Image 1 (cartoon, rainbow, N blue to C red):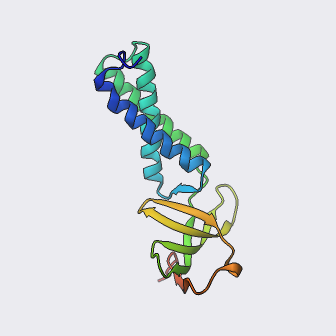
Image 2 (cartoon, rainbow, N blue to C red; image 1 turned 90 degrees about the vertical axis):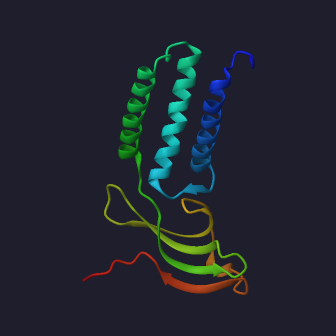
Image 3 (cartoon, one colour; image 1 turned 120 degrees about the horizontal axis):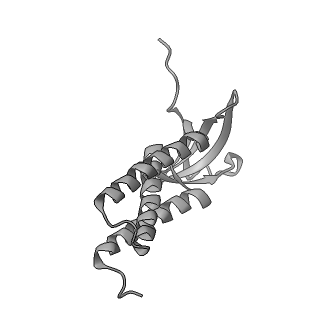
Length: 163
């Protein structure tokens, strides 16, 4: 089995495993990609690498033009999927608390607009920032928050300013 895998396709397998793992983590765990462009990037590479791996296995994707056509088709399909299924991103309105020991951990009040309804969904979550575009969110009850470990901020971060 390993003898059949070309050394040139090993990076393709690595790209698939990493990007598919991140997409699955985002979908099925509390890990969250908070930028739609980064989410599109990982989705695009997960699907593209899978199609190319399958195409090379069946000896169908051998020319560079067929690869380019695959990338364009998958880019269009991912864009259409995002347009029809995207429910909106959670946006932090207020940073309620910040952890005293770990500055990357906050308690935030967030809103998300309903796509075809008038109004917002609301939540209060604990957020641990892993990267500028990745975070780990947990539901949190501020009534049982240990106030000795958290500094109260009430920092408005996403407020509209009217001129």
